[in-house]
Length: 299
Image (cartoon, rainbow, N blue to C red; front, side, top):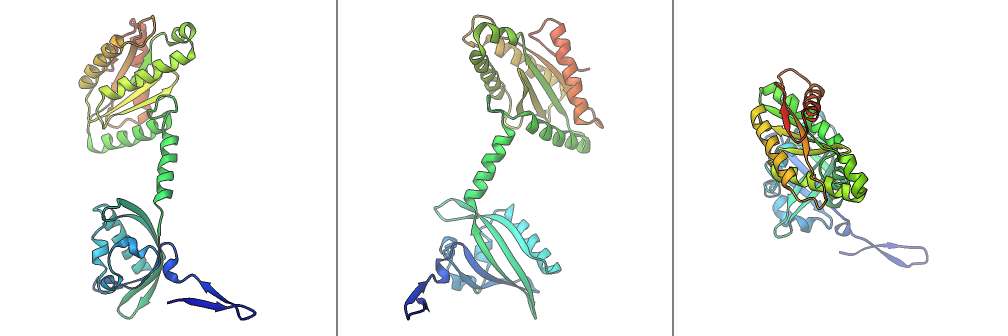
């Protein structure tokens, strides 16, 4: 059906019909019994759903059933809150599309009470590119530019979370602080570009040695931190000693031998994350004073 507007002089202007609009304009009705359907669906995004609007006009479940186990309950809670308090509905969720991956969708709607439930008038918009950009910026803000591992900001946030979890559930948690021995001499002898390569290699060796759930972070300069959830002191110390041997045996393409010193501390129930860092740091300096190229753990 073509929509036209008569302009001055009798000229007809073709106006874009609703089904050409990006996204989806909708009405969603939910009865007091919890049954839901879409009395109205329009917009270019309707075809992305892949379900005939006439089917969804009878039952919204085929669309809702596509949501993940994480997104579905969050959407239901948002609907319940909007229905109960008559507040605007605002949320986002992932919508899997058959053969076309998954898209992120933003939902905005205003509720109106009816005799048998609530009717929302709203819009659905594809925000996949926006979410991807947000994730990219988040990675940049949490990542060390030179080595690609986490930066200090990300480390402290993750450490605070891990310490809180350890305090609540009495689970083991260990922290290593690693420092490259005589790093200034590497820069002075081979130049800063070669020093940067050493930093990148050390970061990569740490990542290869640790588990996926562990975190490697560059604290600054030639100092790294390795966060080990669910890891007691002795296991962390064994891993630190192994890491010392791996780094000592690695070919860094420099004349001098590259070694590291590592301080290890296990979280004590009740202490904060800064106390854990301080104890690991003290053991690092003890390892330096004890001759370097070794790992020492807090007792």
